[in-house]
Image 1: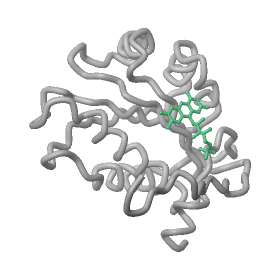
Image 2: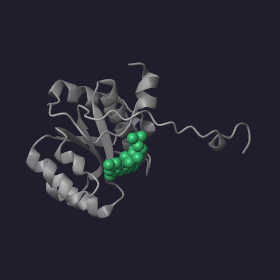
Image 3: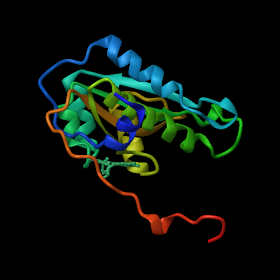
Length: 169
Ligand SMILES: Cc1cc2nc3c(=O)[nH]c(=O)nc-3n(C[C@H](O)[C@H](O)[C@H](O)COP(=O)(O)O)c2cc1C
């Protein structure tokens, strides 16, 4: 698929086929995630891949807007490690870039995915640490549910010319 079609056609996918996502495909998603830019190339991220139904149900129990994780064959928890920062406060932007790369590479590989926000909602961070055994110093940033799509939403046209300021505001 053409890169522009991947970007413009990406939508959140919350229903999945009953089909496993092979480990080598997950590995390609993770490579794409870690190819993201980061401040000073600090790469302050970790990725927790979960497949077990028990853990996925646990995630859905503590994240009110991540119920699709129960159906998705895989969920990837993008985590930030602020100890790896070279430039204070940039880890959130770095993890956002990695998360978007996950979504885009999922589409490029024929998968569907959705970003479920965790950080900065403190109670979701605490609950996910507890459910998944994530160390205290690591921040669960987002849950990305991944699977072969059972829905094919049309691309969204969000271009707003009035939001573009050329030359001066
Ligand atoms: C920071 C962030 C947090 C989000 N959290 C959730 C979430 O908890 N649950 C969910 O179903 N979708 C979540 N989404 C997906 C948005 O609802 C979705 O991207 C938006 O409605 C636009 O639709 P689209 O992704 O299909 O283009 C989140 C997206 C972002 C970027």
